[in-house]
Structure formats: C-alpha cells, structure tokens
Length: 155
Image 1 (cartoon, one colour):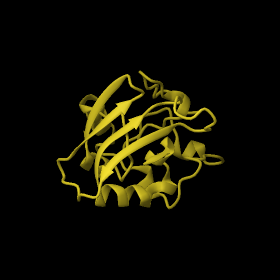
Image 2 (cartoon, helix red, strand yellow):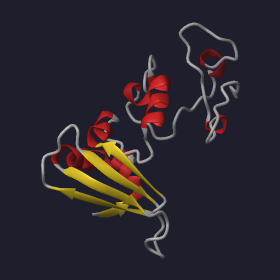
Image 3 (tube, rainbow, N blue to C red):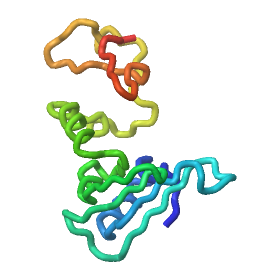
C-alpha cells in the first residue's frame, strides 16, 4: 500500500492505523523521502503487510530513505496509541520513557488537540520560571532542538 507519510501519525488516520495494526501483520515500511513522485506535495511511504493476524513479538522492518534500516516490534506502534514512529530505537525509547514517566499525556486530558496549548490571559497562573511542586516544565517548539531541550524558556 502506498500512502502519504502523514498516515503514520495524523489523527484523522487513527482508525485506519488501528485497523491495520490490529488485523494485519506488517512486514516492512519503506520511507523513500521526497524521491518517489515528482509532483507529490507530501512524501510517500510503502507498507507491506499480510492478512495474517499479528503477534505481539512480530518485527516490522523500517527502511528510512535507503540510508538506514530499523526493526521495531509491531506491538510498539500499538503501545504508542497507534502512532507509527519509524525512528524509535532502544536509545530513543529509554529517553521517551524517562520523559513520560510520571507525566500525563496531553492527548489523555484533552478532547481534541488541534493547535497545541494556547495560553492567553492566564499565562502567569500556569507557567512559571520558579520550580513549583507538582508542576511540569512547559516547553514550546523553540525550546526543543534535535539534540537539546532548553527548559528555561517560559514565554
């Protein structure tokens, strides 16, 4: 099956991913980057699957732009609320687990999340430069880079 790479994570595809992951064994996901279709607005991925019912320990081979290969248990996608993250590996998994331990995922406490967190009039009541017991650091997009997290920014 050839689909846009947004299929892997966008909310509108949730039930399609859930059906695919619950009912089919995924053999391979290939992400070719932008080199598949010249006129395409988004990048395409290819998913090879069978009608076999998946097992918890089934491994999916991930090909990332013909540069590297990764292997991920299909159950990991299910454990991530049916989001298919291609670059997860043991090192990234440990970091993600450390970040999420003791935290409440925003998706669990919101009905619909379209624009992220919008803070207007009450910023001083929910964001602080001081450490306050029970509060979590507030990070904005500009606080997060490929190899760093700057948790000092609150504006």
